[in-house]
Length: 211
Ligand code: SAM
Image 1: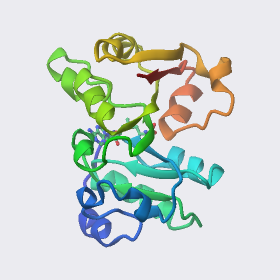
Image 2: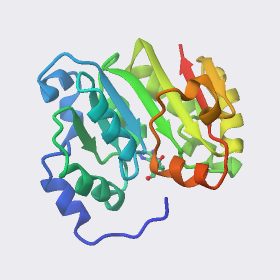
Image 3: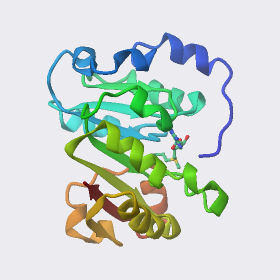
Image 4: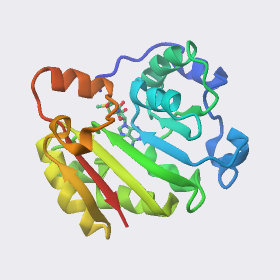
């Protein structure tokens, strides 16, 4: 996502009731954050957050955390959040590489990766959110029956992920090269990027990974 720094975004995020401050202090205590035992699902790289806010509205018995590392991007999501009456969603401004310091083993039930940055150069492989290094982080925080769901329109990143995820010791439970015309697309909730790229005619790819 192209970034324009918004002056004051860090301060607004630090003062927002919708953003978890000091997230590593919540490790092992996320049930207390939400005040219930409902499962927790997270989106890494939520951008402006349309997808995860829509999920939260659709599923009041699931708790959601939207994660975005850039304050200026997260701020856009916060502005939308203020108009919604939801008590099952929070946000965090962190880099996903630190998630094992924020969630105890098994504290997360599902991880969504949507239109993650492709980082096409070989030397940037470790930055891809489906790299072996990131899958090892997800392995630490997901429940044993938990899954990672990944959508993209980037064929290079998708094909890379179909190989990198099994190399990390995971299984590909299901995948499609045309989400919007497949059974996997039933009940699909669109992201901002998905809307943009599918309206240009790009097929959307999706995989589900489990252990
Ligand atoms: N998921 C949204 C969508 O589909 O519309 C946004 C997609 S955007 C291309 C990818 C987002 O992931 C960017 O906002 C970027 O800042 C965020 N991101 C990339 N790497 C990240 C990381 N390691 N931790 C947290 N966020 C990350």
